Length: 387
Image (cartoon, rainbow, N blue to C red; front, side):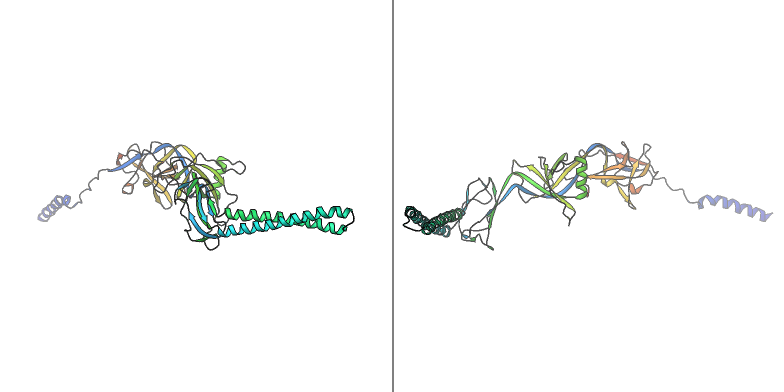
């Protein structure tokens, strides 16, 4: 009986201590507060961008066409010049001597011609009277013809010498902006290796941006916009992005496509013209040419930072109407600034998690904190789709 009472007491003590040995229940974590944004639905231009270089509408090289010492520079470097303005003078004495020699040879030739004409005039009646032989008359006539030819040749030599003398005064061929001179007063110019190209004058009323696109891009442009004869396909708009990231305010026009694709690079050179009334653009500048190839109606856009890559698949976390998290796979289109276009995987009105998606699992509850969308998804400097 005593043993039975001890056993019962041990059981009671164990029953009393048992709750104290059990592990306490884990506390329930409150839902995370995460920033979300509704999918942006807007008409969005699809663009492609290429790096190009700017050239003047006309870039004319100023050359020394005769050799000699540079005698004068008659313009201010970097200034605008008018067509016909005197730019350079070369020491003219050598050309003047050539003109004098040519004119002297011409005078001698004309004297011989006068004598030959006199001989023919004198021999003709004498030949009729048989006072001189017909052979003497024929020789005089031949001498007259040779003298006439010599006069014509010497006249051409005089014109050529005077032309060379004229080349010692170099004038502006067009209205435009002149650059830095490549030769100074006293330099011997016009003969290699000394300067032959003295300067360049550029017409900057309009500017040409030359850039290259891949053969695939060219075929895509042709299919979208067509091409007539040798004209270039005409996209909806061509913009110029300057070195500071700003967009040039005036739109351009595609006006040239090269004859052939460069076999070494697989690219085709194109040229677009931009008006330049304020003379902001200058030859030699590098700029990005943005071509609007399509206007996507009702495009869906999400911030690039909301998209995650998982084993080569683009994924995004979406918050449903009941504030639970769902993960979806995406098919993406081109990037538009800090946004990316979604081809499939989202619907209008979906809320996507901007940051912290890795902290929650699918099916978890969150407290969404809605963030307003950016005002302009197609911001200046937006990246173009890669070719």
